[in-house]
Image (cartoon, rainbow, N blue to C red; front, side, top):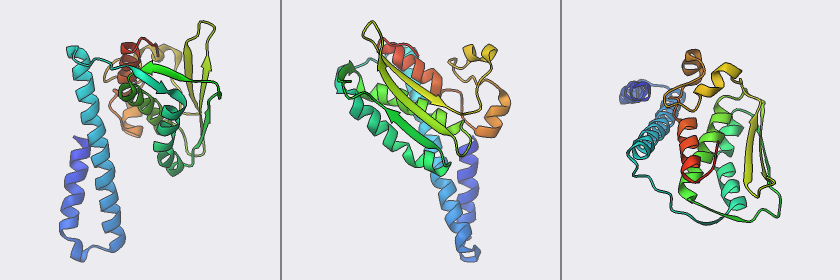
Length: 194
């Protein structure tokens, strides 16, 4: 309900824009946009969880150039990182070719991981994404950040729906506790492991 409350409050404020300074009008529009994006993400996450639990979400695997897919995901979140003065680093070996996966589902998983890293990183931090090949030929993607971290005993909880390591984190950073759950399940649907 938090995004809806913000949308309602700021839209009511804009109804009286004739008496509202321009800076406050711009701020109200920015908050409305941000909360609308947040609401869209929440709805999308809830729909994806519902489809996964109902068994109706089936991967459609095609050959995808991993480099291009990761580069696109990286670029789409670049502005979010810049807004917090976070440095992004992407390291992909030139010999990484194409992989068979569901491009749409994989992109949701990667976007959730990167958004999570940005959300829980402190301003001025650094997020590094690296890609490598394991001995058995599997591709390994690592997302490393300098965020707030998770205690060892709470790490097992982060992949459970609507769960976060600490309730105070929800109050401070927002979120629903669905991003990592969805990422883990989507990667699992494609035969991988998070």
